[in-house]
Length: 226
Image: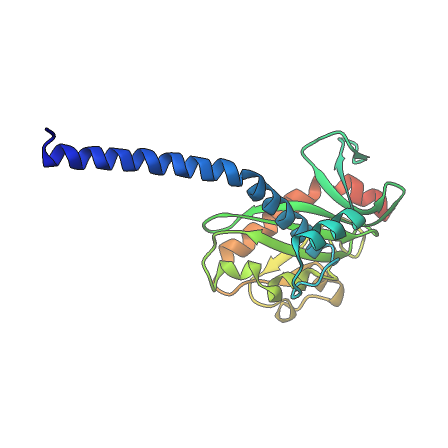
């Protein structure tokens, strides 16, 4: 006969085995749905950056997929800055085609105070005017660096330019405080957005990494400007 202690241990072991099998089965069974949800979320954020959907509107997964497939073409950039279907480390999402780029989005990631910040930035077919900016994943402090996910921060990028008055690539700077208080000329203000209060490190991280990521697409953008 088993003692009470042995019975308890046997029950605990059986429960652990059962729960492990159940969790494994659930993970395997839901993998396709999880992958589908990740795909839809990625497409949704690209569409937001490209200003092809309204930020405050609700869309079904089917609507997101259909809108994406109807408007966005996926390419890569080769080392010469040309669009290609051959996979490289520079993905680019184009509205239009190779002969008529209306606007395009590129991914970026920036390290803030606590985490990597992931998002997309979209540029008009002129190769310099920003049409959208979105952050979809981060672990920054709510109310501080976490403000990078808020509309007030992201919407500032719309209409800004990644080139200076001479047409040279400069990216977008994130100032401490407000751009209007810096005494910049109207032309220079086009290259900056207001920073997040109390989140200097997060703001600086976005500025530095965004410039690095946009520079990787500069051959393509420069060609459009030309």
